[in-house]
Structures are given as structure tokens and as C-alpha cells.
Length: 438
Image (tube, one colour):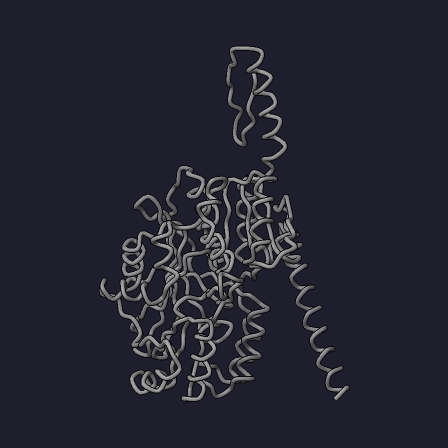
């Protein structure tokens, strides 16, 4: 008898002849040498990637992490292989290195969490899926989800409220947009990731708050410089809420809701202080209806913003693991593991409940948004400096969890803290020396 090694159990396979036995032994030996991990987690610098490494590792999976520079995920006890890519993200050399690592590790599933690497995976999807499962929705659904204009159009057909807005494709359309929507307003790229010319490395674009015609022109000029299109939308300042799903095979296997008290940057950035909440009755069904209409399998996060009267408006849908996913995992909804199981074709079990009321804080981001509140004082939607400083300090006295920090896996937090301090001190010294030279 010859045995073929697997993670959970050994499978016995009788062979008829000695030649078959020899060939089988060679195949098993080769598999043992090459299949060194179950999952390859890209974008190891990101918080959600560290959460994925920990979650999958705690389920007994062998996890490798890949990044173009040293990253906190590399220090996790659950990271069995730290792969340092010598090429820039989104380039052909990055793709070549990724394919080489897939060959060496034999990974079954690739999980990506950044717009740039997802765009690269989508561009070469057919080729990559010949050797690995990508934890991404199917292309028709994904192409809708990454495009705000298409997403909002479908949402409007379903009866969801969307912010008043117009599409702007050129600088000479800005004045008309300002007259129709008013100021302040938000200028958003239709797609967050835009490729450069002739498929060269692209760039990620963020939303901009504009309060004057001059600011609007500058924002549109920047966001359309590479041929992109922008949305010019009304500015909403109410509570920001998000609902996350794991949707697969025509069913919802997990739901989770949170609200963001503070974000960085202050306008629509990543949440840096958030709380788990029960699914809001008014937006829970709307969000699920949108995910089903798009047929967006895998993980997704649907974001809403309320106006001053508390009426919710759809902002966007995010078809990748979000930076705030750790609060869901700590509340009892293990999205990274569910995402892996779905991509790998495993049996899924529904998560029906989770803990609400828990707070989570990204300390570096909270510090930065407090500094920005001082720098941007007086801007619409930005907390005044004194309340911002008071809120930042008061949060230390509230019971909450912190991103990166896990007493069973402390090294990533130590590594992230050291990197931030070195960067902070280094930038301060550089600015000081620059002033002395002048």
C-alpha cells in the first residue's frame, strides 16, 4: 500500500504493479516537497492580511504571506513562510514572482486584500486559476462591485437611496456639477484603482472633500489625469455603518454590522474606532438584496452613510476583506476562514450570531486622524480640535481591543509599533534637518 499525504487524514490507495508503486512514491515525494502551504495571503502589510494569517493558522492551515517589504504579518507565529517579493506591486515582475511562489509552495488558495493586487489577479485570472483558487467573486459580479457608477445604478433600480450625484469626465464639466449638487461636495473616482498607460502599474485614488470651485477643479483634474471618470456627490455627515457578508452558492452564510465613530482620513477613510452592532433593520435587507442582485460571492462589505435625519444612503460595496474585519472575527464571525473554505470548495457552516457592543481601535490611524482634525480645523465634517483631542484621550479609558494586539501572538504588534516609531522619528529628524539647512 502507498499513502498519499493530506492535511486531515491519510488516504489509502492500492496499486496493482511494482511500476505503479514506484511512480506513486515519486509523486508523493514531489507533493510533500512542493505543497508546503494551504493558503497564500498577499498584501502582508495590511491589517486584514494579518487577521487572515492568524485566523487560518488557528484552524490548522499552513499559511504563507507575501509582500514587497517587511511586514507585521511576517512576525506572526501562524505565518509559516514569509515571502519577500523584490518587485513592485502590480508589475509583471511581481506576477512572475507570485507564480514562482505558487509553484514552490503548492498553495491551494490565494487571498488578496488590496486594489492593486486584485486588479493584477483579475488581469491574469484565467492563467492563475489553472494552478490555484483565487478568493475572488466571479468576474461579472466583481466588475460591477468595483465600479461605483454601476453599483449605484443597480441599487437605485432596487429602490435603495443613493446620494445625489453626477458623473464628471472632464474639467470643463465641473462648474455645471457644482451648480447642480452644490458645495461642499465629495469627488470620488468611479473605480479606486486605475491602470497606467498600456497596462503599466496603476495607482489607487481616494475620495476628496471639496468646498470651493477651485478645490473641485483640482480634485477632478487629479482624478481624471489618467483617463478616469469621477462622481460628484452630495456631502453627507451622518453616522457611517457597514454590513459584511459571506455569500456563496445562493445563500448568506454570515452577516456582521459595525459603525465607525472615527475614520482616517476623516472623510470616508478606513475606520480607526468602530463598534460591533446588531444588523440595522432598515439597511440589513437592502444590503443583502444588493449582494444577491449582483451575485457577489465571497466576502463583501456594503457601506451606508446617514444624513442628519438618520436616513441611510448607499455609498459603495467593497468586494474584498476590509481593514476593519478584525472586529468581526473577535465578535465571532470568522470571515477569513469562511472565505478560504468557499474558495477551496469546502463545506460551509452558517454563523448565525455574534457579540455586539465591542469596541476596536487602530491606534496609529486614530492618532493620525486626531492630528488631521487639528490641521483641517473648520473643514466640513471634521471634528473641532478640542473635542478631537478629548475624544482621543478618553478612548484609552474605554474597554476595547486594539488592531495588531493579540497576547497569543504579540510579535506583529511589536513590529508594527517599532516601524511606526522609526518612521515617525525619522520623518521628524528629516524635517528638522531640512529647516536647519534652509
